[in-house]
Image (cartoon, rainbow, N blue to C red; front, top):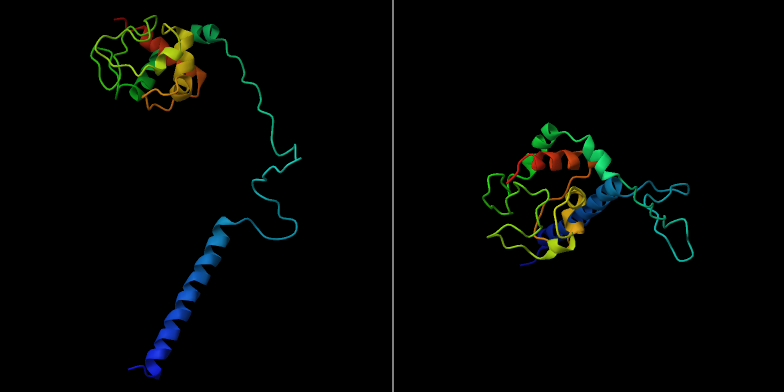
Length: 172
C-alpha cells in the first residue's frame, strides 16, 4: 500500500506547503514591514513609560466666529451640499428617515410632529440656532452621542454655514 512513490509524493507535498508559506511570509514582510537595518526608524513610534515626546499634546480647538462666517454664507453653494441630506430629509414638510428640515433654523429641536426622536438631540440644546446647527453638522455623532443619524458630518466650516443658509431660505 505504501510504496516509495507514495512516500515521495507526501514528502514533496509537505515541502511544497512549507515553501508556499515561506514565499507568502516573504511577500507580506516586503509589502507591510518597514525597511530593516540599524538606522531604520519605526513608522509609528509607540510611547513607553517615561517617554514624553511620544504623546503629543492636543492643540486647543480654534474658536470660529460663527456669526461672522454666516454673514458670508452662500445659499447657492449650500444647495449643492443639500444632496448629502435629501436621502433622509425633505424640504416639503414630509418626514422621511429623518424629520423634514423646512423651517429648521430657529425651530425647537424636537418639534416635528409625528417623528420619533432618539432623545440624544436634546443634548445639543432647545432650539436649532445657527450656532447649534453649525456644531451639530460638524460631527452629529459627537455632538449628540446616541443619535440615530448616520451622517458623518461636514468638516469645512464654510460648507456648514452655506448649508444652514440654504436651509434658512426654506421656511415652513
